[in-house]
Length: 468
Image 1: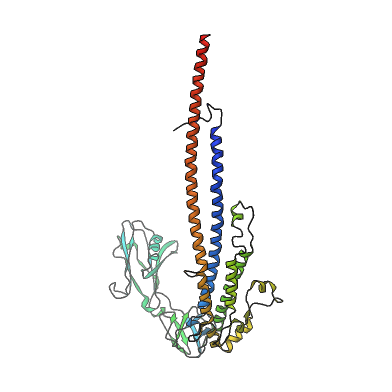
Image 2: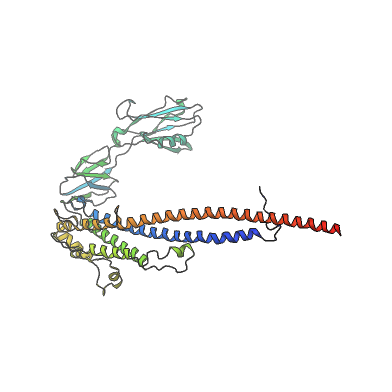
C-alpha cells in the first residue's frame, strides 16, 4: 500500500487542498443529481395521471360490455345460509320450497396407529378396485418411526388423495381417521395397509366406520323427497343450482324472476366512470396547484411542484371535461346530463364546479335506467355507425395514453432526459477521479522536488561551514 505524507517538505496540507478542490467539482455532480430527482418526480407524477386516465378508459369500456345490458333471470333464497341458489339458465319463473332434513356426508374409516420400525406404503382408492376408473389410487410413503400426525400431514398435502386425514384421541390413544373427499353412498373408499412393514400396527375400528346410503342427503323439494349423494343439486329444479349448507327448521323459499337487466349493476358501472373521471380531476389539479420550492435542497423539496401550472395537463383536463359532458346526436339520449350527471352549478358546490368535477343525481339516474335502459345502453355503447359516449371517451384517452399519446411521449422524454443525466454523472465522476489522481501526483512531485532542494541546500550550507 502506498503511503502519502501530506506537505512534508512544503509545510502545506496538500490532502486538504485536494479535498477542497474535489468538493468544488462535486457541486457539479450534485447539481445534476438535483435535476435528476426533479425529473424523476415529474415522470412519476405523469405516470400517476396516466394510470388514472387509463382507469377512465376501462370504466368507459365496461359500459360497452354486452353482458351488462343482457336481461337475465335473478334468483333468491329466503335463507341463503341454509340453501344458496343460482341460475344455471332457463329456470321457470316462480317459487319453490326446500326442506333440508340432512346434508350429504363423506364415508369414514378409523384406525389404530403405532409407528412402524421399517418404512412402508399406505394406499387409498375409491371403491374396492384400485384399477377401476375414478378410483384415484394414491400411495403414501410411511417412513420408519413416522407418527400418526406425520402420516396425516402427508395425506392432506396431496391434492390427488381421495381422502382427508385427521388424528383424534380416544381414551388418550391416537387414532387415524380418514374421510372421503366426496359425499354420498358412492364415496366409500379402501385403505390398503398390505404394503406396511407391520400391518397389525394399523387395524380398523368399527366405531368410526360410516358408509352406505346413510351418507346421502335428505331433502324435500316442493313436497318430493330426494336423497342426493351431493349437497349441490342441479336437477332438482331445472335451471337452478341449489347448494345445501345446513339443516332447516322450516322450508326455505327459492324464487326466480323473469329476465331483466340488473339496474343496480348498470348504475354502479356508470358511477364508477364518474368516480374515475373525478379521480383524474382531483389528482391532476393537486399537481397543477402545488408550487415548487425556490431554494430546494432536500429530496422532498425537490419533488414538489413538478407539474405546477403545466399547460399540457391543464389542456388535458379541459378536453377531458368537454369529452365527458359532450352532447351526442343520433342516440336515444344526448349525454350524461340526461342521466342526472353534470358539473354542479357554482352556488350548490363551488369547489367541485371550479374543479370541473361531475356529480350524480342518483334518483334521476335510477329513473332513467328504469324507464328505458335501452336508451341508456345506446348512450354508452352507440347504435350502428354512431359512436356512443364510451367510444368517444376511449378515443380521447387514447390520444393521451396510447402508444403515441401526449402523456406517453412526455414520459418517454423524461426517460431520455434521465438517461442523459446518468451519463453526465458518470462522466463527471470519471473526470473527478482522473483529476484527483493528477493533483495527487502533481503535489507529490512538488514535495519531492522541494525535499531534494532542501537536502541540497543543507549539504551546501554544511560544506560552506567547513570552509570557515
